[in-house]
Amino acid sequence: MNSVVFGQYYHANSWLHRLDPRCKLVSMFMLMIGVFFIRRLDVLVLLFALAIILVISSKVPIIKYLKSIKMIATLLIFTFVFQVLFNKTGNELYTFNFTLTYFNLIAGILLLVLFFVLGRLVKKLRLLQLLAILTGAFSLQMFWIYGDVITPYSITIHDASLINSGIILVRVLILVCMSSCLTLCTKPTDITLGLDKMFAPLKKLHLDTSIFTMMISIALRFIPTLINEAFRILRAQASRGVEFSQGGLIRKIRQMVSLLVPMFVIAYKKAADLALAMEARSYIPGHDRTSLYLLKYKARDYIVYVFSLLLLAGMIVVRFVL
View 1: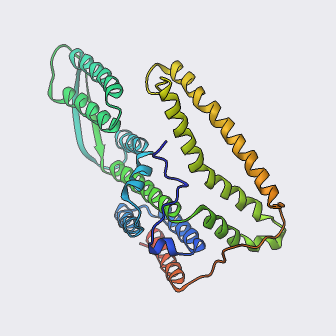
View 2: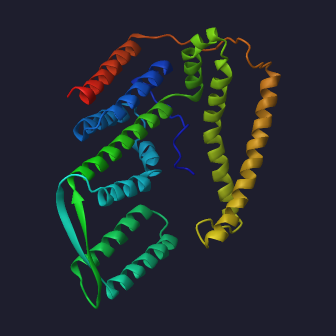
View 3: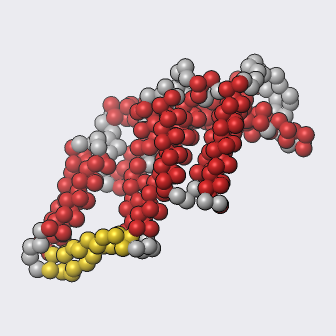
């Protein structure tokens, strides 16, 4: 729960924090679109280096970005591995020859049991534990052949599959870094105000964009609040002896009910309180309202716009010309 970064703002005094929210939204959107145009790993690595520069210049602790990457680390690793193993396009790079014996099969099962036992004893570094267990299992089948042979098999690595896996991995990392940079360096109220100003021309088409931006504002505002409430409920349940990481699947489902029911009650209560507060302040959907803070472009915003447009144009040229 504590590792969720999306929707959380980190106060700092960086040039990214001082940018106009409209500039950040449009620039990030253009860069994210450009990332999908690129199908060359070397260019994506350069863009990832640019994303790292943005992360460092934001003056936000690196651990904040690592937490957002940690949320999808397991998915990224499995996607990379399955893409390498089962995508047979391109030239062969290397072939790993394995021999499965009864001894290796039993040893693999014991390693799997060891992984679950370690998960209960050492609850941190689960991903590293899984990688160590998998490495040990494959090393046994490759270098230690003992007992009756069940079947030999091989795994072939192709160059195109390796490149495609790298493209997917780097592309997702760029998107995660950019989206985290946007939410960590921009207040939810500023994002709402920026969206409202960006969608203002749609009002001439009789489309009420204020309700849409208000919904986004409330959603972004409630994400960290609900996370903190869930963390508080977890501590309260743990003080009563509830252990969410132990037990079978059925037991874990029953334990999650003790978390979900209070969460729904808290969410509805906070929504009702928010509705009463908005009514007390004479909020009427669809009516024109003034803003306490006025957005005004500065020189740095125009510089970022020009740089983002040039970067997007360069990515399109790389995709369709080079």
